[in-house]
Image (cartoon, rainbow over all chains, first blue to last red; front, side, top):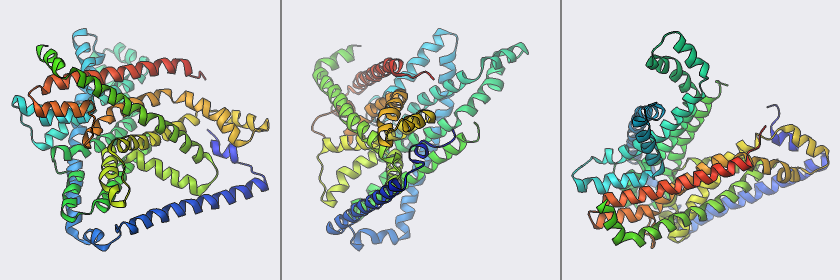
Length: 266
Length: 220
């Protein structure tokens, strides 16, 4: 990788091309500005810029309530991530096991959990499990399904990492007399982890997104708290906009972190 | 097994319709999302800084926003701005926007697999930059992203479940399961049937994607 593709394509423009580019840039800027103005005008016309829709954001209670929601989101996402990392390891070990009795159920579990929408699993914990007498708290009704479906994806990520470790490593470790478990846990898996850390962190974005379904089970995460705020202040647009910005900021930070983690390795 | 067969007697046609609706929502959101994603990718290549910034913002926003939050905004908040979109188009719009952002992201990575020498060669043949993009860069980039696009299509298919979050006249699979579980005690067999249909659809897409990937792959 030397020059970026844009650089090669448009790298050495003629004076005329430069002029055209400048004119087009100005035109694009003007069009985008017009679009932005149009949106603001629409807000104004609809009365959405009125102080009563926004002034409660100046109150600390609003932010502490949203902050509590964000903490709820984090608590659920973190627990789901921890369970997924552990359970994913178990599923992956099962999938790579030489014993068919272990392998097939693991493959089935992975395909099943990966292939069904998290929302459907949430509905099962919310609507179906109580019918057969299993009553979970709202926290677990949200966290458990997310953890399960993430575990299946994580298992596949682990597997990709383990398969990427050169075979010679296993052979060398075996020839040194290490037991199978030692070969895996002290030689192969640590190396596999280094390959897949960016992918695992990126998976966290999906976990955070999935916790948005918390309002389905009325668990107090960001989206649910937003709904409560809206019920109090009847300010749909401002609250949903602020919440969307918060979600985007959190997920953007996680994405950037995963890119940073991926950087120095290669 | 008896539970499932009794369920299928009662709700068989409903499951058929739900599956068809899931497929329909998937297709109707994937195709425009894909085309929009290609458009965004091409526009982001142009040497127009304001356009690039805004489109980069577009991609980052729709890649990082939870789809439900976007759907709820479109369905419940936009009417306050005097923009009223019906439920079904709202779901399709939500999924298409998210799909377009991911398409643009993957396609950008696909473009990076095209060797720079090819572009220099094309330019030195006298081709204009836009022609180089459409004739040299895009075709190869598209062939390089078959696999991530397959994953995206599967993820999109699973995301159609969020149609159950708006009062939809038709019911897709997840909405149907939630209705059956509320109306009767047949929640578990209903869930099993829906899960089987989702998994089967996903495997079908994965299989088709793998076949296409085999044909389209460029060996470098």
